Image (cartoon, rainbow, N blue to C red; front, side, top):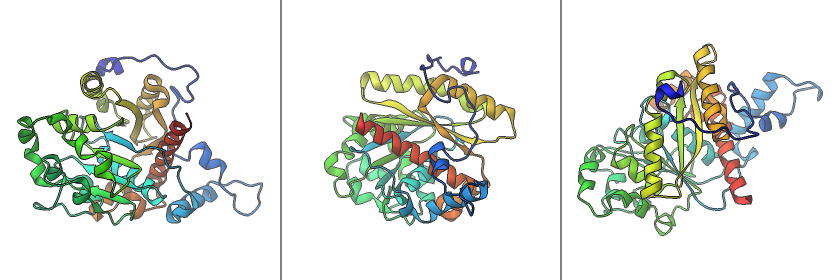
Amino acid sequence: MFQAAGVPRETEPEGVVGAGEVLRPGPSPDLANNVEPAGDSTVWTPIAEEAARATRVLHPDSLQLPRPDRRRVMVVANQKGGVGKTTSTVNLAAALAIHGLKVLVIDLDPQGNASTALAVEHRSGTPSVYEVLIGELSVAEAAQVSNQSPNLYCVPATIDLAGAEIELVSMVARESRLKEALSPEALDPIKPDYVFIDCPPSLGLLTVNAMVAAQEVLIPIQCEYYALEGLGQLLRNIELVQAHLNPTLNVSTILLTMYDGRTKLADQVTSEVRGHFGDTVLRTVIPRSVKVSEAPGFGQTVLTYDPGSRGAMSYLDAAREIAEYGAEMRSA
């Protein structure tokens, strides 16, 4: 399947837990082990588990996620549209923010879907990432606080961003405009622990700017065959950026989205991705969910729209995995 999609085969690491294994949406092992059973302390029930996990979303003080020792800048990229890229960006950002971490989302997609989901103003004329790229505003001046959490900031995208790639072509250091805007001094007023950059579904100059500015790439992959198309080209472009513009860039995280356990194809894609990328793939799989799809229409993430839903629980689990990986980086 991967060879047909043009994805180079990688050697599977030895001792990788879950490589080639199909994991359905649900709690990570750590979360499940921390659940207090209802009633008799010797009895575990799925209802008690779900209730405990929903409580963690509704009462975020009950689960503080570890803070990285240095800021993590992650670009969320996939040139194929409809794979859950923006949805994953805003929900992971919200999950980290409501559990105590400061998060900044850079909406680099001219469609502005991340701005809509985080309920920040992004009409034409609003201070936005466009003004940041051309040097008229700083990130702190363009950032707005989302209603999802006081810890969550967003630099919105407006329709002005649609022509930004043409303008950037003639600019000096055109590939590094966003990197300069995200300097430690520029981010000092916000002091985010995480910066998520939501890219357009293309491999143009905006996406290159994001990859030059970031240290890590998070790739969402839909659990369907056609979602693998273009993945090989994306990985080759990442290698080019590593070779010529940003040698520290690495693919740190792959997130499987839109998993439908009723289909054999979802299991097959999940197994193939885990077999190729090993422990780069999060244990958590995001299920196909109506609630996740509905939430942006109400200017919300699924964590506030329906905190007890499977989608909300899964994004919380995925955010915890990302935060724990950051803690492992700190202790390494």
